[in-house]
Image 1 (cartoon, one colour):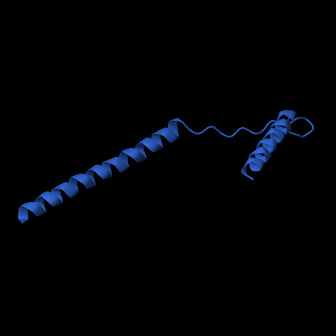
Image 2: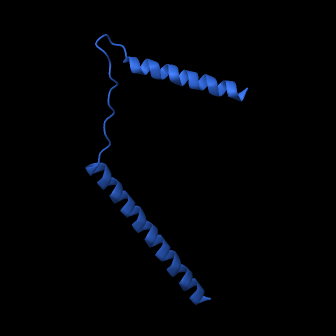
Image 3: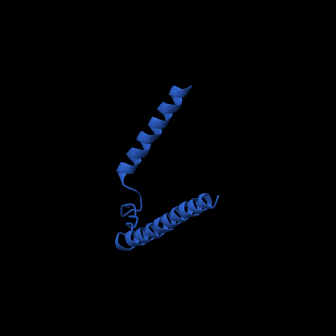
Length: 76
């Protein structure tokens, strides 16, 4: 009985230690990555001098709308 209890506690101690080391390593790697490789700042969209978006965006919007309409019509 005592030997089974000893083995159980030893095994649980090893698992607990491994998980603790895993959490610490993950935290340290996360800090390292965010410190030396920060996320790029989002780029503001290009706007013409008149304050309107470029013509390519309008064309893209029309293409997307047409694709959505075509998809919806297929489902009927």
